[in-house]
Length: 82
Length: 244
Image (cartoon, rainbow over all chains, first blue to last red; front, side):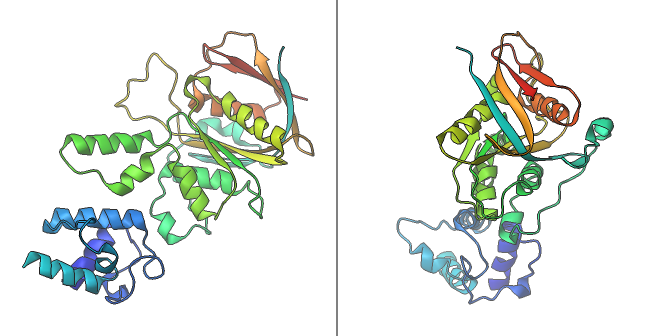
């Protein structure tokens, strides 16, 4: 799941020079980590909804925690899909 | 009362498809038929995060404007474009027609001030930035805005004109709205100092010179040619520029 999400992040956000192995599952995705921003977060949310049919509700969920890293996102996705 | 304004073009730079010309290399006028497909390079100082969001038009703007800003980023910028990233808006509308959801990235980059926003992020630029959509009025409104900023208290102002060819989807005839190629022209102006001295005023002539995208090329030719004056208008107001 983590590698699948990494590939989705790379494809969705046009991270041309980055490969799956370059992304640390536990590193921060936004700001200091991969350097993604709020538009990327929205784009990623849309891609996840399209591919996995999982809608992350910004009103009810703690999106900062969910999108913190690939690992936290994968954990949320697995719980949401089961 | 007729308004006459004198200003000085301190420096200028242009990026257009198939040409890469600076004020010291005034060869473009002899090679203007050489316009061909070519993508502007991305300036080295632009971060990877911003690079992936640059369209061909944005790259052209970065190349033209990036070479004209001062090292301390102290000059306000007036961007002027008739259509901005309208081709991106069209792409988005076509996707909506197909029932697809709108991409937040494409939406954010389709608005009229998208390129100026990217520029301010890429160059860490915190000065006043204005983006004009001049409609049928051509390039004159950007000069009026820039001269207004000079009159306020700014020593210099950077004007950046840019446009790209419209998609065939838009029926442009009978209007002269379409540029032959992507072009971005940057001028850093001041009220005094060394450079090309120009006088700018209204013209009583009734003109049919086409809209903004075409007027950029007309002004560029005026900059590089020996012509002493240029008059531009598009059925409404007309304006004159004289080399002093």
